[in-house]
Image 1 (cartoon, one colour):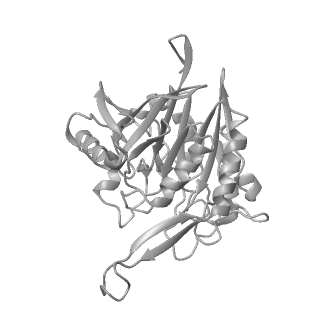
Image 2: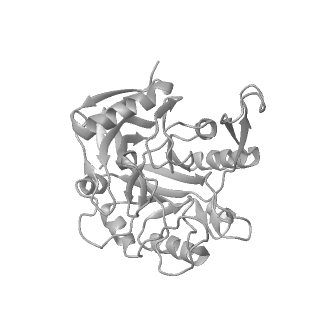
Image 3: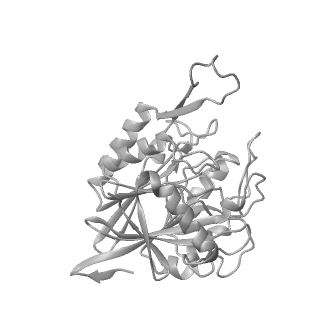
Length: 351
């Protein structure tokens, strides 16, 4: 809830990793996290699947979907903001995709990054709490064939990425050596993103931008992630949150604003053959917000497992300490510092 600090009003913000939920309806699905979510002014997650019983699955890809009853679980848990720009949103076709958007909005959960056409997929979600107005835009750089919204086609809000492969010493010098990859954003899409963020900044106090990006099962932040993140903040974003890799990536501060490259999975109720112990590691990102932006960012380490409640971990011991050690290693390229305070991990910009 809102808090009075130094004569200024701050509002609480909580975000979590990807949510692909498909379990029996029941109370307290999110365990002890429920209280944290419900007591936050703004609670964000990425909905990683359609919630629908209709449609036909897409060929030649891992397809996910959940029962529409899952929408009530998310509502009751406290979510009021969700991204739907990702590579599973249209796994069961356009009707299931559009039905999910309508369903979530009927539960008063604001959705962004998806729509009946490109114009709608670009529209922000705007939510107001007392004196603070927050706006959210969502984008995906992971775009299966036919998933990108167009002027006359439903889909997700796309930012397309080009990949260039560079062979060390020339492609004939070291046969069998894997090439180095360089990734960069299609400038037309990047300019469209920047324009939308700039326009939103004029309407709200705080801008949240979510990106579905990176490479699956990869801890390393790719060039295009940093390119897009920096452009988002240069255009007016106060918080940049990422997802898709299924594993943790580092946290960076750019112009004193946090970039959370990947929070991993919070709930993933599917048997995915390539998942490992690393995909069970996740964290909650939290901070305070006011009209000047972000204050006191922190993490809460957690463990997830399919069809189970997420568990809050102690960062001083066991799996919680292991996650903190991983975060510190992943933060090294960005010089981001951490410090344990009570049961949370405080985040600080580096030099």
